[in-house]
Amino acid sequence: MLRSEQGRLLTDSFVTHCGDDLELIMTHTHGVDNKKIHKLAWDVFRECTKIAKEMKLYGAGQDLLADAFSGNIRGLGPGAAEMEFEERESDPVLIFMADKTGPGAWNYFLYKIFADPFNTPGLVIDPSMRKGFVFEVHDLVEKKMIRFDCPEEIYSLLACIGSPSRYVVRHVFTRDGLISASSSSQRLSLVDGKYVGRDDPVMIVRSQNGFPAVGEVLEPFCTPVLVAGWMRGSHHGPFMPVGVCDANCTRSDGPPRVICLGFQVSDGKLIGPADLFDDPAFDRVRSRCNELADLMRAQGPFEPHRRSMGEMEYTALPAVEKELRSRWKPIRE
Image (cartoon, rainbow, N blue to C red; front, top):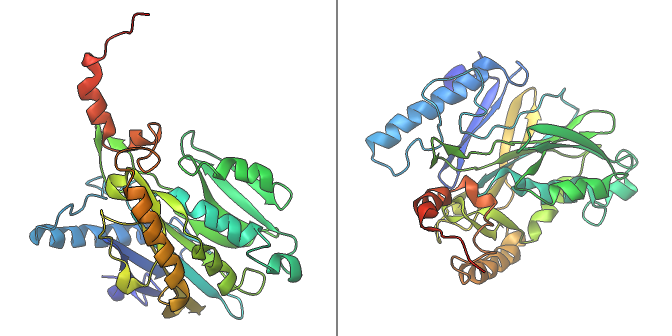
């Protein structure tokens, strides 16, 4: 379906997967939030759902939260990240795709990439990056946004994004206003009292020549960070960087996985991809993720493996609480 639109609605496209999630990468000249682009993505997901149901695959279409398209795919289930820019002489773009975690999973990594000189030496030695970057943060609870100029407001930034269940880095810009990174900020929750779908976020990062180098963008993923999601979306687990061939969430329906495909964008065409985590340089972090998975799984139904009560409102737990509500009795002291 995407290929049939190349040369018409689309300039180019690439299809892949992370875990059980279908990933659609598209280039075009119609700007962000274009209704026809979003409708194409929606139609692809709907057609694939029909095939999955014919095959009796479990959870077919669970991330599609509506029967009809409403003009924009955001809010209908699938995560979406977009950015619009004029091509430079050389424009490397990295696409990160995750399974079994939520949109706040990118917070740590975006901070390290664009604000931490210990990770990104270009912030110190590259004159084109020394001004720093601007972080646009979204409050998923109160539906509002704020921007932080960094490095001046790093502490205020961290005060917010250290709570990734509520605050999400949506965009990063240069101090001159050029888009540097974009992430999906959709968070699925209860619909009609039932937990539907999963939050499987995506992220786009531009690299080189005024932006962090490819190696600086990838370096934070050498640290095994704990993220929310994993089994039933109800647990914390290590975020494991893997090649596409290993993007299969198996152990206890996880651990959470992330893949990264690198493209060179040339006249709107996607040159590549390079499977950037399919590299023995990431073997050690994968081993450490497995050790953390052992530790977290040993906690069973207890926090911190299981998410806190405040976060569990986005899972199936409210149905259990409803069953028990009439059985609670006041304590007489």
